[in-house]
Amino acid sequence: MLALEHAHEALEGLTAPQVRGVVRQVRGLAVSVSSLPVPVGAQVIVRTSTAAVRGEVVGLDGPDAVVMLLGTAQGVARGDAVELDELQASVPVGDALMGRVVNALGEPIDDKGPLKSLGQRPLNSPPVPPMDRPLIDQP
Image (cartoon, rainbow, N blue to C red; front, side):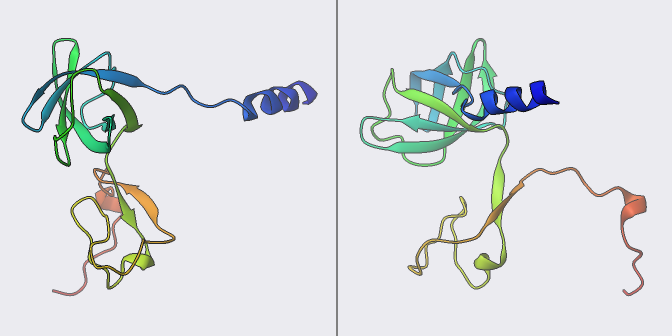
């Protein structure tokens, strides 16, 4: 048990390696990224010289990942860094969303300040097995 505790202490200070790629080509809102070994559906961040733009991997073109930007392509250039943010799309959930207005990315657009105490749920989670669902007893 002592060896396990020492191993745990040694691992606590480590951080996970960043998965990164490089913009190879920009075509409208579609960006070809080389050296980015992530699956389709992964959420990424393109780091330009002036901003960070979110995107989603929507396809693969040979060794390159095709990223659809979820914001403007203005300022995105060949050589910009691309980092993995999440392996799958997720959405914010929680009581703090009640009565709020958010955009398609879950960001508040109602001038009421930032959202607080939100959890995250996968956008494409597996369905509940039919036998585990409650019976429908009303039309």
